Image (cartoon, protein in one colour):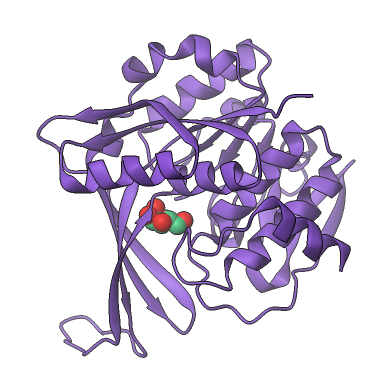
Amino acid sequence: MSNPTITVIGSINVDMVTTTDVLPNQGETLVGREFHIKPGGKGANQAIAAARLGANVNMIGRVGQDKNGTDMLQVLKDENVSTSMVKTVANVNTGIANILLSNRDNRIIIVPGANDEVTPHFLKQFKKEIIQSDLVLIQFEIPLETILYCLDLCYENNIPIVVNPAPAKELPYDYWLKATYITPNETEAEQLFKGREKESALNNKLIITKGENGVSYYKNDELVNTPAYSVTPVDTTGAGDTFNGALCVALSEHKSLSAAIHFANAAAALSIQKFGAQGGMPTRSEVDSLLTE
Ligand code: RIB
């Protein structure tokens, strides 16, 4: 059996990471510890997570005609992600994420730049490739109308689509139901789905990542909790992206939902033990050995 093909539609950023012991108040200047420039963007991170775990991965996205764009394209290529559907945009910067890392957790501000040019019009030229995928994965650092276009396209063509609503944006209710699975973190779940706990059509699609509290999901309307591995995190940036990439690999290999969540949970636990969103993303054998421990 050949490896599944996953198409990731989403953002490509350069992460500007400052580590600090204390976060500044409004109007305050503080001295931080370290500064690093790292590859990132939820789309690119998820694509690389899936590729390291053995899937054939197509990335659809955009970068600026600048050094950051050239560097990010090279990072994707080096990770065996197909970049034939990543195109440059003139006169726009590659996306940037300003990340403050403090107490092993992060606060992020993104400036989308070229990611805003991942429009439905841009995607239409890749319709054939999208509907030939075994599975599609999207996140929310691209325009809302593009997210709706992907959901319509996948739903109409029976292509499984995993929707990672990060950062949180409201969708018309019917669109949530077009997703195969929806993977918010706790904050996003609270923002988007609070008060809808009784709606089983929605609940049975939700997989909520809760950091050190594990992962919650519904199985036939029953709430199930998979505990997190007990590890000391170095950097949690990209843990959700690793989870999503790994979940999609397992689902596209037709693992059961609970096996896919265990697999993704193990991948996320490994990812937070190294610095940078992509730095700790594990290989297949690393995940398999953690699962057999
Ligand atoms: O999920 C982590 C990612 O969010 C970072 O790499 C940053 O680029 C932002 O998109």
